[in-house]
Length: 232
Picture 1 (tube, rainbow, N blue to C red):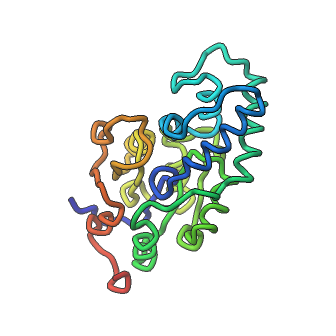
Picture 2: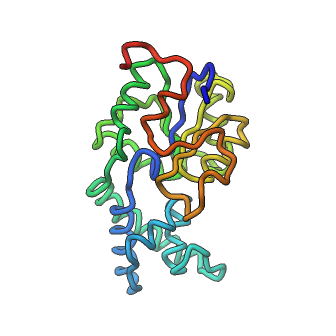
Picture 3: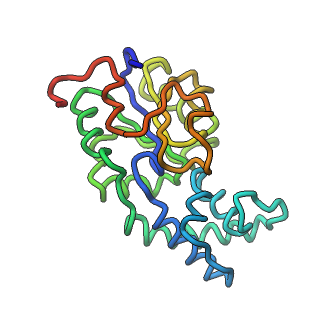
C-alpha cells in the first residue's frame, strides 16, 4: 500500500518510537513503595502503559488494568504527584529507541516531511526524552497528553495538529502502536499505520482498523509515494 500526498507524519511516542517501560516501571514502583504498597514486575506494568500517567497510576493503585471505581480521587492525585516526581528523575535512564527509529526519522525529515509527536505522555517529559535520544530536531511540534482537554483515542490532538499547521487530515498520517492511535486517527478522518510491537494491552493491532500494519518501523518509508533522494 502507498500513502499518496502525505505532508505531515504524526507519531505516538511510547511503544512506537521508544521503549520507556523500564523507567515508567521504576518510577511507578518507587511511588508504590512511598505509599507502602507492593511493587509490580516490569512486564505487568508494561501491560498497563498507553493511556497516560493518570490512568497508569490508577492501574497501579488498583493492581490491575481494570481500574477500581472506588479509588479516592484525592489519594489518586497524591499518588500521581509522587509518580510524576519520581519519573522526572528517571525520565531517560533506561529508555531506549526501537530498531530503525532514528535513521528512519532522519530520512523522513530530510525527505521533506513535517514530523509531529502526538502522545498521551505529559508534555513536560517529551522534549527531554527526545533531546536525550537525539530526536528533538526532527519534530516541529509536540502535543502531550495534558496539552489539551482530551487525548487519544479522542481525535482532539490530531485535529489540533491539522489546525495549527494549516493542513487537512487527508495530508496527514498517524503512526502508532495501540488502538488509541488508530481510533483517534479514524475519528479524525486520517489514515494510520499500526505497529505490531509496543504497548497494546496484549491485543492484536490488526483488529483495530489501521490503514496498514507494519512490523518494522523502517518500512514506513516504503509506504510513502515520494521521498527526496537526499533521504537515502
